[in-house]
Structures are given as structure tokens and as C-alpha cells.
Image (cartoon, rainbow, N blue to C red; front, side, top):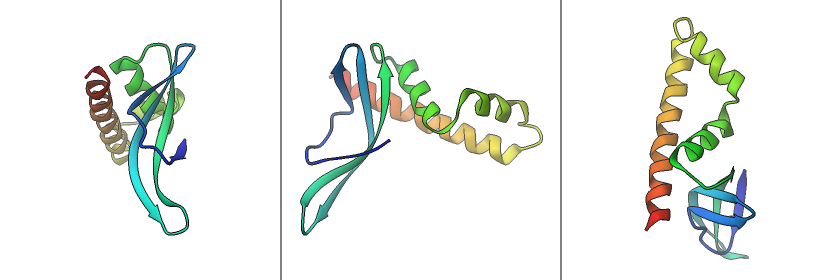
Length: 105
């Protein structure tokens, strides 16, 4: 989900009630009529954020479980689609590591 704020978001934001926002792809934008603000993507995590939950939530932002299974079943016939999925999953893992490291500091 795309989000905007006039305050730079934390990578992991506690919303209360066991829910958290994972904020990523943060870009500082300056517009003459508004000033400086931040555009970023957000995914919702239910339960305490763990590396595994963050990775799964990020992957689900683009691929449903059924899409993911279909891509894996057809990896021999749709190699480029499978490679794209693997690249995206790897980027989600890296992003999750960065989020968890910054949250634990």
C-alpha cells in the first residue's frame, strides 16, 4: 500500500493490538506547494514482527499463495517468470533483514 507522511516513517511501526506496519521504499519528496514529505510502501503484520513474517508479508504484497505455487510448479516451462519471482523473494529477504536490524537497535 502506498503511503505519504510529513514525518519520516520508522521501518517497523507498532500500531498497538499486536499489529505492525512494515515501511519500506521510503523516498523524500519536495513539492513547492507542500514542502518536504515522504512517500513509501507499507504492509501490515499481525503478531510480533519476525524475519519470517516480514518476508512472507512482503512476498504476499505481490504474489498470493496460489500464484506462488503456480510459479513454482511451472518453473521448468516458465523459467523467466520463475527467475523474476526468485529475484523478488531475495529482495524481500534482504529488506526484511534490514528492517529487523534497524528495529532491534
